Image: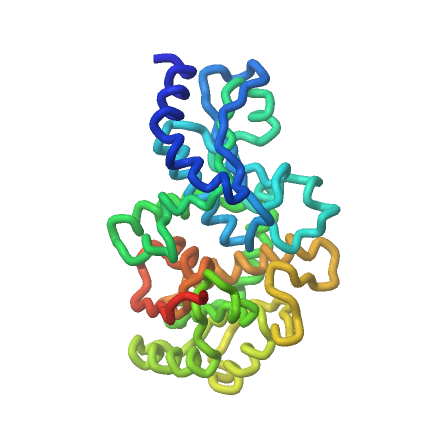
Length: 321
């Protein structure tokens, strides 16, 4: 069967699934052909609708669509150049580069430039791929879905040399990780964010950390947070047993805008903040045990860890409506 017939059969069988949300402003998935290069391949261009999301929300968006591409034998390519993926990215920089390619290698091993002159392209739906990942990270709670998705996430999480070098330097603070509890404190900018998880308070996280340290016989804490206030509160409790990545932080979100929209006053801040955040998540994945809420950061740490934590404590306090 030739490629054109395969495409026709695919669209006849899946049009209902892939286009159910178009009435809500999401981009339609569609097939395009304008050029003649690579006629033997079908490239799946991964896009996102609306104003995009945070770094790891976007990572999961890509992860789900890479699953779709692999299931159909297509070559995935991430397009963060022509679509608005990133909350908080300076509008002057949105069309200057494919931001995915500043951090990660393309999942299909081919650049957006090469794909743009190819014959067969499928432009992905802009919808988040809930049909693959489920809602509220449900795949984390099922070993049959977690381990395949975790393996794919690790295969997708291939950093470019420049951010990889920076991350290695940032994580020099994390010594003896197997005796360390990794604690993820999602920023309190999300306290009133509808559709996101209800977050534990800092005092609750501190108490849970103390309990988990005793349970696991661990004596160090690696903290991931965007807020100086949370670092101070944890340091007051754990002192020199606390470690964290040295990075700019907001004082507290009561007086600052939300995480993706907040920018530190330095050149190329969005890129630098992204690298620092990736370092923190990698650090979490290296720890002996994990504590955190239901959030993209928690999910990526668990995926990169691949199920080797001694103990995992996910704080599930329901969703905000």
